Amino acid sequence: MKLFHYLRTPYHIPLLTLAAPMILSNISVPLLGLVDTAVIGHLSHAHYLAGIALGSGSIALLFWLASFLRMSTTGEIAQAFGEKNQTRAMQSLLASVTLALTFALTLIALSPLLLQLIEHLANPTEQVMEQAHIYFATRIYSAPAAMINLVLLGFMLGLQYGKGPFYVVLFTNLVNIVLDLVFVLGFEWGVAGAAWASVIADYSALLLACVLTIKLLKRKGWQPAFIFPNRAQITHLLSLNKDIFIRSLVLQLCFSFMTFYGARLGDNILAANAVLLNFLMLVSFALDGIAYAAEAKVGQAKGEGDVKKLKAWVNVSVFWGCVFALLYCTIFAVFGKLIISSLTSIPHVIDTATSYLPWLVVLPIIAMSCFLFDGVFVGLTRAREMRNSMIVSAVCGFFLPFLLMHELGNHALWLAMTCFMALRGITLIYRYRKLDAQQALLK
Image 1 (cartoon, rainbow, N blue to C red):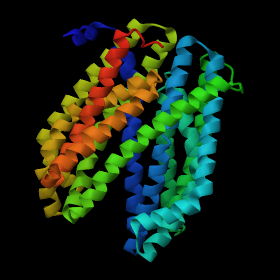
Image 2: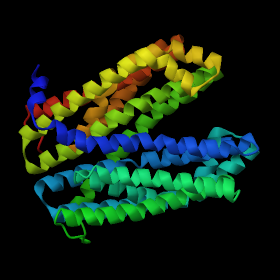
Image 3: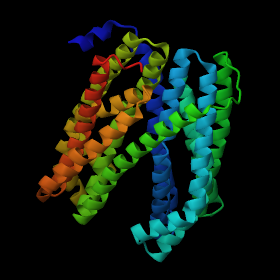
């Protein structure tokens, strides 16, 4: 196979060197949620835990939707790095920071309306909503730091500095964990303590990210500077971010549908799906790390105008994506039930989740292409293709199969998720090959 030709190329070590810190930072993220849950879970009433779950889940959704800021920045900076164009890089950075601040301040201004929407959709008890309100109303003020952090993480990744994002994410989680223990258990501030711990952690991480970014620029021989972008750059950046935002929104719609429809099928199904979705999170640890590296390397190659190198990075990324995907398939097939038992001790949930485990055994290799080629198209800064692929895959790959097979119940949901992941990969690969055939990868 042509793919194995790249086993003899020097591309593997640089790709894995860049991907490894991102994989480690991905692994550290869920640890924070476990600590938040453990600390609040030791308070006297269950409504504290339910309240922080609702409040933090809502914040996580809003901040996750802002991931377009990191993606677009990575692609733009990687291309500027390949061009050795400091002016373009600094213009893109300033424009992205401005957009991040605008998005964050908009979220803060809309927070009262967002809280009303959360209450309407979730319909929680008064005590739970009170705690969710306390958490959300405090944590939303970390939005400026969180949004700018996304931009700076994308900037560092675009300049091939994978250790920077790892240091920032790890530092954020460590500060948050320590302050959780101090504020919640030490000062007995309850849910408000957990919220303030996250706010302080986000702003502390912003300071670290700024320091790392300045040092990185000096190491590259670039001088930090405020260079205002022109109208064409602003228009391009807004279009790029708009398309990635729509793509992220549609993706979240599919996952949310799976959760909400699963709730209609009963508590055991809802709990089992929550457990099984952790398998997808495990898959994302490695595949997202490879995809992030692909973003930077493909973007740099495009900036250099080297299509041969660009295609080599794509092939090497796909190779390692296949390696990790097959590894996950094997682990899930052999140890899947053990993983389920480690996530829950409820017998009915274990039995229910185990009955749907075969879907998760095959999903890593089916989903591999959509993870990897998302990264490729971020590096190419072709967000329109990502948006179109996501919309087509959601309609034809998720909702259509589910409607046709809904009588299968939860199996229909997992069939829809599998078809959705597969079609995302197929449509992106098709578009990549078409661009290659048209010699348009560098345009």
